[in-house]
Amino acid sequence: MQDKPFSYTIPYPGFKPSRVDNHLQRHLSDLKGQFSNEKAYQTLLKKEDVLLYEVYEIKRPEVEGEILMGISIVHPGKVGNEFFMTKGHFHTILGTAEMYYCLHGEGFMVMETPEGDTAVEALAPGKVLYIPPRWAHRSVCTSRQQDLVTFFAYPGNAGHDYGTIEEKGFRKLIIDRGDGIEIIDNPSFNE
Ligand code: PA5
Ligand code: NI
Image (tube, rainbow, N blue to C red):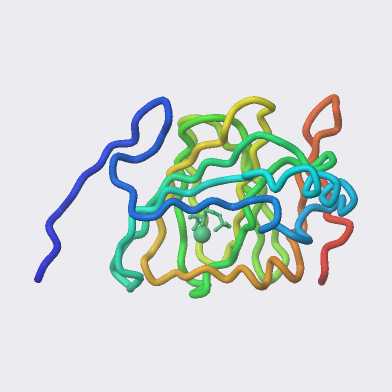
């Protein structure tokens, strides 16, 4: 049987799509070892396992030819001087791309290839970001009050490889210097 075309809306404000098949929530404990200040991480975790981000997924079969879509919402906050962020991942099928459209908030997409090329793109409402095949990606919310909200779409067969990032981290970090935001080399990047 063939699928019928379908549509849905992304209301403003709120950004919860009118069609949601899966609501994913990731907390501080899900990003163990990913923030550079381990002491600040443990202190915050003892206080509360805060919700860092959530994703509303519109499910499709995870096969070539399909497109997976959703809304990602990263909440504002910091661990030490590092802003709340997503786990980040390579796609399991490295040769698959992704696109993001920023709807709300302020932040960055931190990206890198297995060969060690790096890129950081600022995200603001109206910005479209194209992530070519091979680039790992992580969203970072740098606003003090507002969520970073993005719409994303990627090939159905892409898959998520979280292990590489869990083991190595990203080469670049986004930190709050007090007088501004800085992109620095990750001192504990695991080559
Ligand atoms: O595939 C994507 O890049 C997004 O759907 C992300 O999965 C989403 O932003 C959450 O990030 P992560 O999967 O790294 O936890
Ligand atoms: Ni992705």
